[in-house]
Length: 342
Image (tube, rainbow, N blue to C red; front, side, top):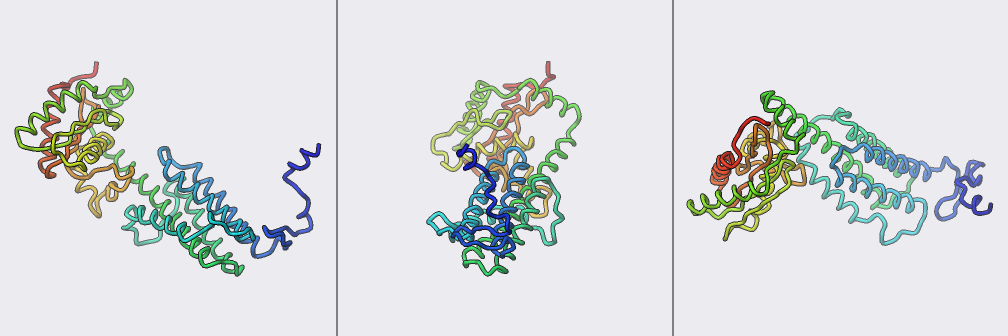
């Protein structure tokens, strides 16, 4: 019985309208410190709601939000009078947020007006969190509590949450643009792609190896030292061929070109214009952890009227990479002739 009583969440010590701070001091529940702590608690919960409504595949953003939640719990402890420790809110915490804000900035660099919240459920929840953060910052100053580092942290926090929200709006806009582009494809092509996905159609390792061998022969004839990568229908690399003397950096670029061509179902050279400032896909290259390539050298590989893989070529000029990728596409069509799905 005593164990159950000890585990109870109610103590009755606050029934008289007072509560204890972390240092043991008893204060009215209307005290300014508790106003700050209540706002921070609300902010932590709102971030949890935003986290629970993130779109699939945003594991990095989920981790960032959880980091903020842990930091806010630490901040609440410090403001309530708990001793500051080496794991508290520091200048490094602020610098980490600033680095993330800089990372997201290209996604909203063209915004020059107030944003109308509600682009997505996730971004709307973050916008609510931002307004709570501003309220918490104001109450912090009104209560006369803030250390300089706490004031800076709260000021930067609302900027950080704003950047997260705009990033999610940006991603949704990209998804809509890509979906619109796919809808413009002839209906028969879309139907074939749907059937191919349902049947799990994808370029095979044997087909990829044969393609890369034949493409290397062409590259040798032209005196080029290339890295060539083939991705399957899900964008994962299944074969990468590195010619002697090829640039080390070309490995990742070739893999990413193949990924881009599959994921967007278009040659990478077509993205250059679309991703310029003012273009419909401006900022796309800042998504997917930087894996999107917006210059030539990547092409989708078609099989029976559907995208079943991608080829990426890197190591020479953009013009040569584009030309060799197009040659590779032609070679692949010989390996995997176009035709109707059975």
